[in-house]
Image (cartoon, rainbow, N blue to C red; front, top):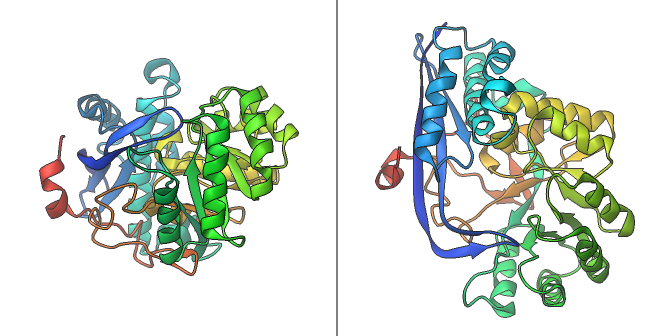
Length: 365
């Protein structure tokens, strides 16, 4: 079997209302799909991250990287990763590694399809279902405490037993009040995570963490800039709230440094960013060797397989229509939360099929 083509489809659509976290405002959402075709008619599907805002750049990088796998055996995934990731030529971080991630994910989808098994089974098959939390709680125009509480109550109605909200975009005491509101809305038995998206300096994060400890916060995500390992470590030592981070980290080397600094309690690799499934599984093994749990950031359709494949998978992130207006329309089959858990698809590969009919008007590349 040989690879005959590698191509991308990039889609971008507006949100009903812009959403804001501690540092950034998002007006659009989208997906970046990578397709790897073979001479035996089997096609692998991968997903990348962050390319829809610069589609021409992303597609150009893919055109450059695909030369390393055209005409090659798609099962030689380690070799392909090594050939594509040339730090001196393409850089160690950023959009090139994100494009590489999409290609790598497509290769793994293809490999699992050839094997005739779900990807999580091919990767290890530790379980077929995982605990899940619904991400949201963004700042939005006209969204006050009442609207925030209603959003969280709706999450619980959908079967969630854990929820996440944004902090860092307003003064600390105002965010403390928002955390109190969410805790009262979901009750004492639901996990509540808070995510600052790098908005604080370490001393501000410590102040905030100490003030919300009484609301039984499950974790404090990305309190400071991703490269501030020492600041992250200071926060973990100053509060009883576990610190989680890693969505902006790249490759096994970045996570090695996080672990060596004992910078966080929970690692959050994103396979669509850090270098694909090949790197994700190495990060998971590195974390396991250091008795650390993995709670991946991002796309649930890829990460359900990765969390289900490993023994130190803690919980899955899940986005619903409150974050993405196209939720439920992007793929032919939907992942649903049942009693706080998501079940891995039993179809070969990732088990996803892009709903091109629903997305046609939003294609940008």
